[in-house]
Image 1 (cartoon, rainbow, N blue to C red):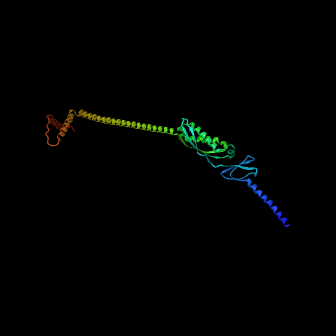
Image 2: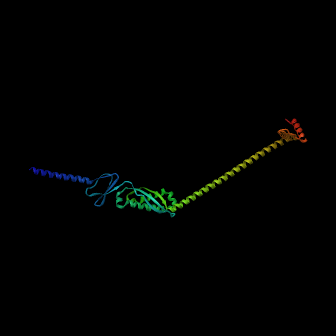
Image 3: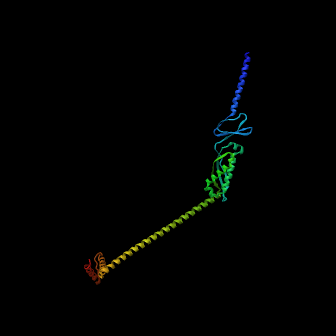
Length: 297
């Protein structure tokens, strides 16, 4: 009797244990915890069922399967080097880099097989076409415009793949050795030309300044001569006025005074000396003294 009861109890507990295990298995199969950096693509019988976002998600056990686990972190494609020809037929080697992230995993996994290679090929074609429309000087000086153009066209091209291009960079533009040597010679020639132009402008400026200085000196000399002429004219006018007012005596007085001043200067010589005066000089002294005595007040 006791053996029968034990077998019955064990059998009933085994059923409950199996049922509990089945429930746990169903729960585990129906619950999916998705990390913050991923999205999961769920299929049912080979067809797209849903896209699970970060957190706890529920699916139908044994019917739904997580087929793809897609990272939504920003990715960087390996640095890519390619050759391109500019509008002025110069061969350049361009080094590019692209950053992107997946926004819609269902498009990425069902519309493109290798997304990295697809983006790299698209970027290469766009860069080659963009550089082909620009001359070498424009490629060097308008790099930011070229980068913006590449980013815009790549974004439009990969839109059907559920991808966002966050950044596109042209890291470097290299030239072959022959082209680089020719550009160096051209640069040296341009520097020499600028130096000659600067020197010529300096000489021109020096000549202009010298001419301005000579013109200024001539103007000052002319001004001085004009002032001297005005002074002489004024003195002549004063003498003429004196003659008109005082008659001939004023003129004789001025002449006699000048003669006396001249003899005084001669007499100031150093040492003992003999001065021989003509009789006209003695008369000049007499006239001067007479005029001095009779000079009008």
